Image 1 (cartoon, chains in turn brown, yellow):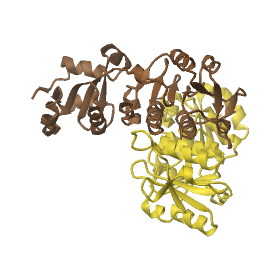
Image 2 (image 1 turned 180 degrees about the vertical axis):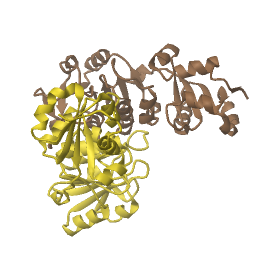
Image 3 (image 1 turned 45 degrees about the vertical axis):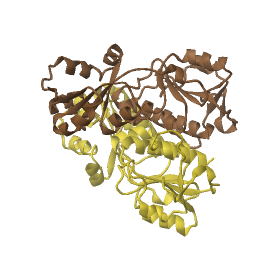
Image 4 (image 1 turned 120 degrees about the vertical axis):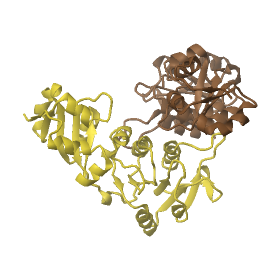
Length: 252
Length: 252
């Protein structure tokens, strides 16, 4: 059993960097935290680089070390690596591998344009999973899936369906070429109520930034832009709420 | 122009207590922060106790002081009263008055059972507003509406429709007596898919705690319990997402 005790340890410093987007991008790895997410990572056969266990949970070491590179750490290091107030003492470092080819448009696909809030991003992925969508494409300018708070909100759904980071223009081209409908979401007069649409069997749905919505350049290229009729005095809906209403209504 | 400069000022200490549930309950007041919420409070003729302005925004003083008790504070005090990292230098202290009698069941009503996350609570209220619901009843054991983060997520919707804190049992009695349907949300076999329901013109909808759902004692008293069919591998939906799908589907 290897146990790392120093917060100055080189490996610890590398792991700590995975809490930042820059560190994840450089190492092409990300960190998940907690029993649920680690178990989901294993169950989905994710490319696990290391399992990290806090020393007071050393009884779990053997089970993990049979299949994975497993390391013990101190409470102090666990706190350093954790994004939560009280951590469960279990982490996994996972290699980032994006399975672009798994998104084919056979089932609906969710496209996210500049979603800023990690809680929203995670909830969108969790809901796309629950709604039976094929995958999620996170466009440029969005918070990334591997942000600790986004992963927490996604509750492991990114292990269930492909979630990739890519240029949305490329994906609109992709769906156009295959004659798959692309629906934007908008509030202006070019949009129609989602209730007036007879949805095709499969489609792509674009939802946008919390403040400014979907990029107008994308809205010009869609098959149709949809809006959700608002009855009360609320000015808008939360993006995760709006997307959820559309996903469950358009794909049954 | 009165200007408060000391963080030790008695009034400042009382305001500061409004950031806690206990302080709000004792004083029967709450604090809103930011231009948008203060303007909504005024627009909706809420019982404003004081408008508080940071001294670098003193040019706004005159406009507010014509109609309201208006006080200037220092940057240091503004930071003390703020729940955000960067505050806009504008606050309102509002008296808590709950308009129970405005909820009559003429339009659908949302009942919240032990919702714990303030962001969820606020989003639920914002979405109930957008969906055209009549009001929201927050049951015992829930986070309260006047929690700073809940208010932020609600984005002023609590100024648009009555939101009250009350015993849900009382409200189930209320709807029963008026023969208004009460729908629970559940995952077990006693529930039916919301898509198989022909919703009545008005109803009450109960959604529950993030972890444990709606109290079984309430589910026994409902007209029908509903579930949202989940297609993917997600175990559940976020409570605000689930409620949104139901609200927009059941009330069109």
